Image (cartoon, rainbow, N blue to C red; front, side, top):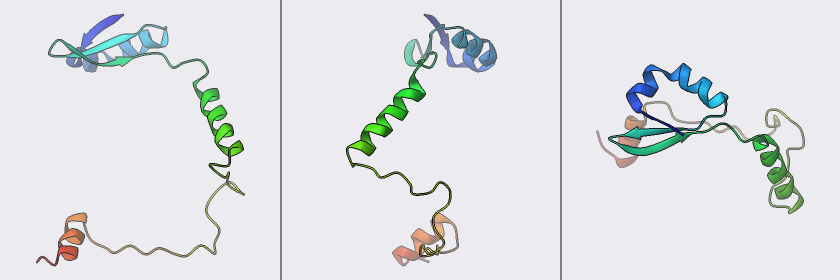
Length: 96
């Protein structure tokens, strides 16, 4: 496993990504301590997600969408107030 600091990773990101693509694992360090690992994706990661989805549907935990795309037009419209988050929080608190 290759080890690199954050600055070196940032400066050579393309090189490190190519190494990960080639199957190498890279430990990212900060102040000498490993804080993350860059690893190649597992070969069946997408298939595993799809299998889990099928398991949840079969168990009745989730229901697949009847049709792909946007929600039906008869869904109620949800209007949100205008303003910044700070303004909305202040108004909710009765401030200003």
